[in-house]
Image (cartoon, rainbow, N blue to C red; front, side, top):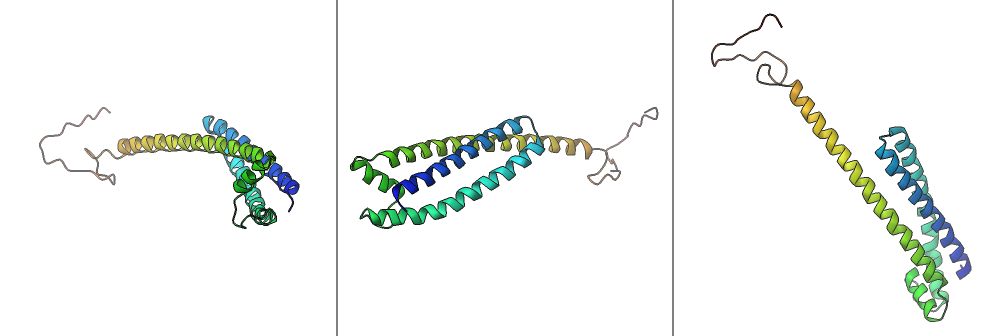
Length: 163
């Protein structure tokens, strides 16, 4: 693969990452609105985009290896290593593209971390609410945990028949 083809492939990957960032930002909004249907659609969109990115990454790994060899570098040289090699020769286009991809990836990580925190807090709130409701339902001072009558051997018990 030539450098121009690799740059074109990186442009496609950049577009996919931009789309993924948009989907994560939409997810933040849907989580704030507790829109379960919207969140399900977003999960499908995320899975599709991540799958496409993974497919593209596999072909890019082979292309990077071939490109490294064509520049006289080791086949295990990273894309960043190739970009730095080219930048030393005066061609910084690949390095700029990598910096752009890195910036987008960092934004995705930030939004994903925010979404994860929102989801964890939401889950914690639900757990706390369910625990409270469970305690109210299973009050064991009169009824046992399974709902059977519990005998009180401590003394007299007052019963209000009007209730």
